[in-house]
Each structure stands twice: as C-alpha cells, then as structure tokens.
Length: 189
Image (cartoon, rainbow, N blue to C red; front, side, top):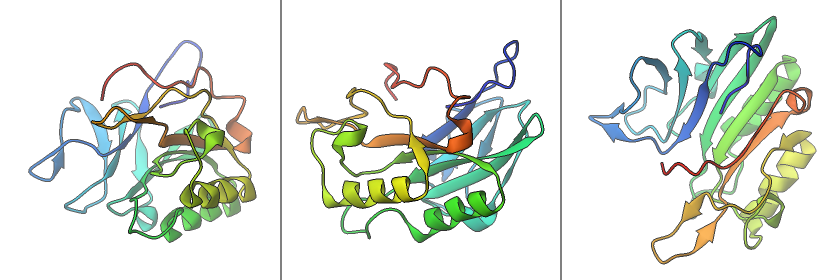
C-alpha cells in the first residue's frame, strides 16, 4: 500500500496485480500517476498520488513485474508489484525479481514488494504449503526480507468457496519499523 511521508501528510502508493485493462490500458485510476510496463498484457502496475513522483526501473519491468523508485525524504525506496504465474510457469521467484532484490541490496535502497504469489505457505496464512511456497519462503529468508502478512484473512476466494492467502507483502529490513497498520482490506477488488 504505502508509507507515510510524515505524520501530517499521507500520500498513497498502491501496488496492483491483475489490474483491469481496457484497450490494453489500466482503467479506473484517475487523477493519479500510473506506472506499468510497455507490454500489451500488463499483469501489474503501480498507482501513486499525483504529488508522488517516481521513475520506472525499466530494466526490472515486464508484463509480470513493475518497479519504480520514489524519494522519501532523503532515501530512495523501490516499490515493486509482482504477479507470479501459477503452473505450468516456472517456480517463484522469477529471475527478474531475483535481480531486482539484488539491485536493491547492492544499491543500498529500501524495498517494498507486493506479490500475487500463486504460492501456498502456512507462514503467510495459507491453508497448506506447496513446493512453490517453500521455494518462495526460502528466497524471502535468504534475502533477509520481512514478510508483513499476518493472520489468515483470505486474499483469494475461488468460485467454489475455497479461500486462500495468495497475496503477500514484504519489505527490506530497514523499513520494518516504518510500516504501520498493514492489513488485508475488506474492500472487494
């Protein structure tokens, strides 16, 4: 979702997976900045308040991943939205996500990453754990990322009634005390 720039001024950054597209353009976000790759099939985008100026990290963007840098006070923060296709696609994380996390680390930049992981792990509230979830959790731990998910409130409800936690948010270690009120919204999207 977003970080507060100061206690008096709240600005929003929204990390979106599976945005609504019409004529190959992200719809329903007006009077704001929309960041998305130049792909015709964007599975991700990032929306910011008009006053928040970011710049795309094009080398880390494709139809499944959007990454921008935003300056907060004197610190550059990378925001990334990722869609991880399920089977038969390869296991998560993608090479592009691995490269982005490494870039953030070597550039000493903070990172906020939100993903439709299409992976199950009980650690982030799924009803079970699958091999994709195990691989993704191993990556999160190995890269010292902090998983923000708490509880078991579902982020996906299948038409047959199955409820699951497939969406996760993680941050670099330096941001853990800056994130306040992370939760799964009751708003249907």
